[in-house]
Image (cartoon, rainbow, N blue to C red; front, side, top):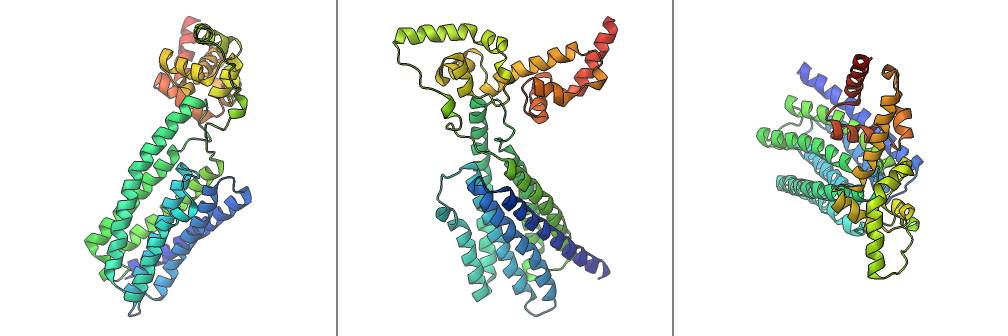
Length: 375
């Protein structure tokens, strides 16, 4: 009994902290300004989810009443509504403006209806329906998300040289964590049949405490990522790309051949890769060609993506600077990678590890040993 009371107090404390964190995230988004619609949706979702965590206080107040199970399950059906709002947020994030908001809201409306039906009937079948529908939505949506994000990332790599503010792979990471937590909660509920018993048993409490911790950290991470997130479309830098002059098929073939022959030398000699915001369109304009010719060269001749192609030049420049550095123990990575065109250390680290299969620190140590041996 004492242990259970301790868990209850811990849960109430963490629920309050998590709810306050979510409200703080809401105000952070509001103060930062809503550049995209998905940021507005996230702000609303955070408020609704904060209310879900405050519900634990109401459940505690009515825990000893005759209607404890009914009230607990009623609040749980509200939790499913919040889950559906998260799905709306992610759909709008990965497919901006593809769907009208009124169509997206049909998903949470289904769960709102289930809350009303349960409040009127008290039937546990409504709760079973919410669990089954949520499992189907989340699992199927997760696989769709993985495919969409992978396609989006490939599109980015074909068009821009830095993914820092456009990459959506963080969404998949968050969803995997939440899927594991939701799976544990659903399995535990089925095994223990907790909807027919008193809400406050040790197993439920421990899972809810862990859920509070994960939800609080995840909300901060998601908010921070969403505030920096930018959505790329092929129209982002369309102003930089001028229409190629009309010419004969012979002139096109000759021009493409000349570009393919000298493109690497032109990019390296003119240091175009030092432009941190370099895109396929902007580089094509600098070379005096168009994006189709340039994209074809990178894909079919270099067997690479634009992202990898440009960052190879940047990485080579970093290595040249490291070789020219006498004291490698005092390497200023931010200064070196910044001067070589990398927009962030995370991008540099991803490129470096892909190329050398090791961390930069290990490479520097080996380089230092080699220099010492030569001397």
